[in-house]
Length: 181
Image 1 (cartoon, rainbow, N blue to C red):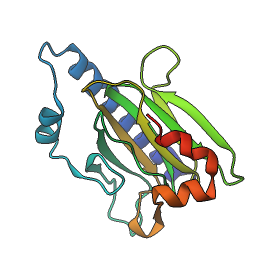
Image 2 (cartoon, one colour):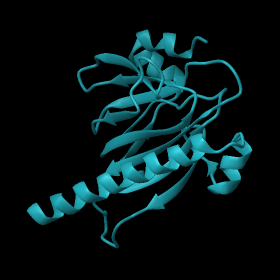
Image 3 (tube, helix red, strand yellow):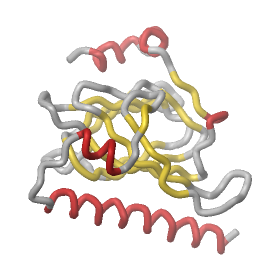
Image 4 (tube, helix red, strand yellow):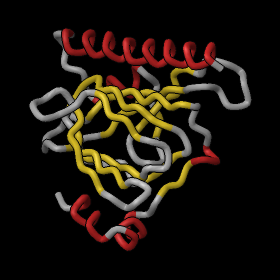
């Protein structure tokens, strides 16, 4: 058990460092990186929550590996739909506009935070398993947000619940503000 925790910790650190290196390379690039460039370069495809993604890494062939990761892009005019998963998830900022993150804990408490590298934002966000969460862009314009997501253990489709917009508003009326631009 202790050995697998150490391995998991090393994999998480490696994933975060990879995201940081990628962010530095993209930021230092003299060429403007468009959403089309990201879609092509990383072979992103449509995600059920909105946005686009590609699976990056699963460290083993176990039935449910200890962790998994994806690259995820949220377009400037998109938002992620409220959802919950049966694993912990980390979002690591890479490039683009800041996001507003909404989390609803298991007691129904709503927390709103900012994700990115600008003043008042955090470049790393943690979502505890069982929390419902969604994100939307904070800035108007044409730049989306590119990030990596790391799940512990690996995300599995059977542990995923996606909420319709009307459903989440009915359950938590305060979330209506999430949908107002």
